[in-house]
Image 1 (cartoon, helix red, strand yellow):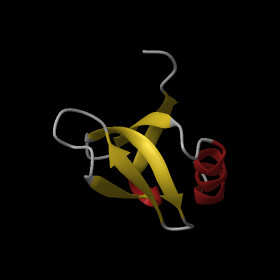
Image 2 (image 1 turned 90 degrees about the vertical axis):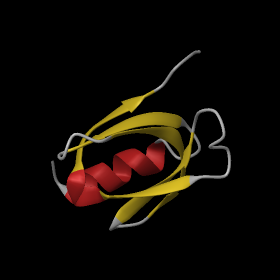
Image 3 (image 1 turned 180 degrees about the vertical axis):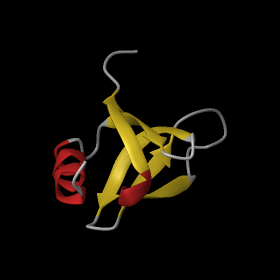
Image 4 (image 1 turned 135 degrees about the horizontal axis):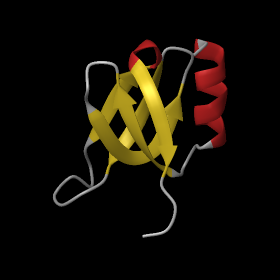
Length: 70
């Protein structure tokens, strides 16, 4: 997928909960806090991770799933 398309998709999902799977097999679940043309920053979801953030490079993203409901 083109990086510009990924960036535009993530901008639409800003402040929403997502699951991101990377090419290396990592899965990250959190709320999108920042999107640039190089990376996306997620505020992690889960016990004891309220203040943790992870940065995922756009070129490593395999799929993005919008989390709806609980």
